[in-house]
Image (cartoon, rainbow, N blue to C red; front, side):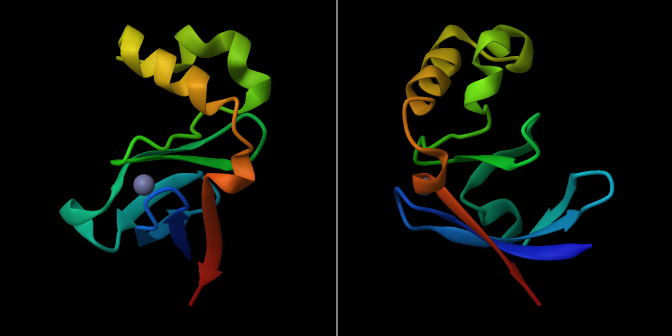
Length: 101
Ligand SMILES: [Zn+2]
């Protein structure tokens, strides 16, 4: 398992996220229920994507754009539109993810 400091570059909030790397699953958030993250996802382009409470969202990579409706489970039209808007941004300018001890 590895801890990462994930920072939203839109609202500047961050949290330390513990990740099980073999299964690409999130074990816990350092701030628990007070985390600024609504969701994280291991994407098809082998990068993590995040959704922040401020609306910043890069859970879907640009290469996955054509599969959006399948990918957004339980998503409504609004969330799909939000993700489409986020795809216009450069991924690297949305979140940073740095390994920490
Ligand atoms: Zn944010």
